[in-house]
Image (cartoon, rainbow, N blue to C red; front, side, top):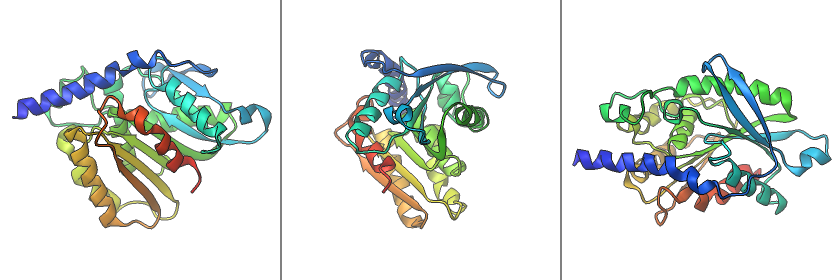
Length: 272
């Protein structure tokens, strides 16, 4: 039974890794790309930046939406096109989209695990804390220096990126204002994040308002734990947290990002 469970998890990871082959057919919008040499990561990272038309036609500053899996052959093109469409339709406010291209995805997006089967997904895992420091200490200042960015920050991602976003929400909630986690891989480390969520929420910072939107596909290894997170959030009833759990039981793990991204962005970024 346990063997079948882990086979299912490995299949999820493979599906997520193969998604870029579909995304290559998406038109690549006009965007900036630059290389950020990170001492924290000990490597150079490609950063892709899409700006709304309002950026060129005004002198205004804009909120920033960060995304994992942000390479040109990853999720950046289809998400940038969706953001542009929603802005044009006035369904969300204009934002700058910043995509972080992967080098070692499974290293960067996973936290510590004591589960031996988890460790088999890559040569190196458990680097999420360092990756989070990279975003905060290297990437935030670089974007603020290069672009007219406001202090409002959001982040979006799916699968292991969704796990990273949920982990960031619980462990470092001050980093972003809006969190969007799609089918997060909460099974990681024997669903440790789910079982400790209540403890993290008791330390949730007072004052600034935060928003969390998360969704699950029909896959039991994600939907079971997102439902538990939903119940934990409901019990906590934090006054400075607005959250929305949006299960999508007809979607597969490989289809849910495209299926729910519009409503996720509208709920999170429309200013309500």
